[in-house]
Image (cartoon, rainbow, N blue to C red; front, side):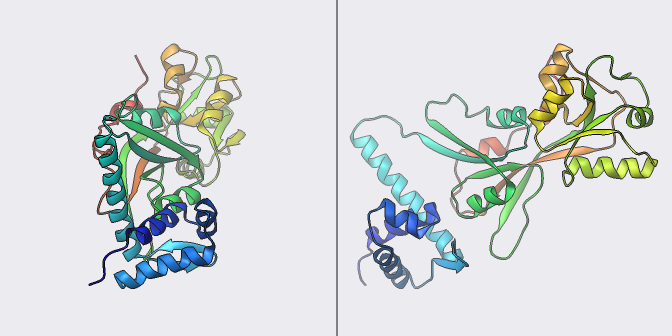
Length: 299
């Protein structure tokens, strides 16, 4: 049996993590054809195609995902060996996290708190739209994606959606804008509101509520960013429909108040991971957290 060529594996590993043959060839100072030949030799050695083309994009096959899992382990072991022999101490573990750009920053910090400040962990946080983040997850360039909806499932890409928090959505605003003891129907009918954009889970629930109550709310702003909703609420523009964690500090300080009659709407938070034989070991503790307490304002 021919000896396994680890140079071919490293070329495959580089392309798989870059997700782009041209960019990888330029970085490695190789021609695209030469790089393609090296990967083809690895595929012939393994007996399986490792990539499939969809338009101009390269996507890992199932065999490619398995090969990448093993390559990650092999090259991480090599880095550990060098670090040990050079007595450089423990190798820092990288945790690559993608987060929906509109997701509450307070929630992101709560989720990451167990690894923040650890000397042996490097947190790499990337924000963006869900489509781009899921593409990064499918290419295994990310370990986990944080969002407020479960991942779509298809035959080509399999993900696991871990529901890690479920919290009610409230109406918040500055003092004097509304009576926090007023019934929900009166608030929605008479007080201007700041809403998430159409398509957001909380917005869908709010639109269904107002339709059921036959109310046309006074919408003063539609915003796709939770941080901006918080700022607009602080400016007194209107009541904001947000999960309490988004404005936890403002509620604790009294800068904002919350209506006691909650709309029957909740928002879920998900940590989405790819199906992998060798998941990042740091994820186990993060996914096992009880984040129920994050919904309450700080004392």
